[in-house]
Amino acid sequence: MQSRKSTQIPVGDNAPAVFSSRLYIRLARRDIAVFKFLLESWDNLAYVSIIDKHAAVLQIRYTRDSRAELADFLVRAAGEVDFRMEYDRP
Image (tube, rainbow, N blue to C red; front, side, top):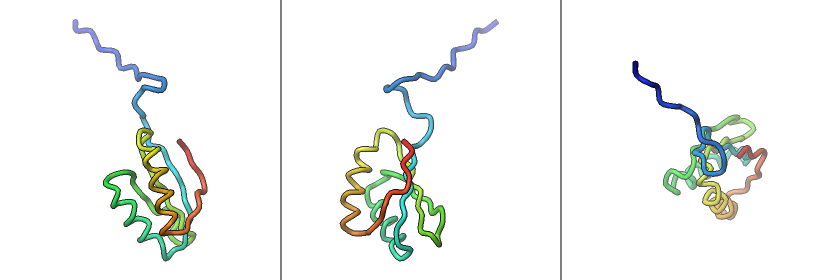
């Protein structure tokens, strides 16, 4: 009889993230395409979904490891597009 390997998920700060972190932002509808273009130019930094196109709310999914780089992007993007963070779920 073969033994089964343990499938426990490591925990703690060094454990791999199981879920993506999410950040929600609100901006002017006219700026959605520009914001998405700017983020895509950062080469797979995060993934953007439009949650509400009428209210112009975007969901940004990113890995825990890219949080500092995403913060840098948001500072730089604020110079191009006016937006505000609605909710951040690390």
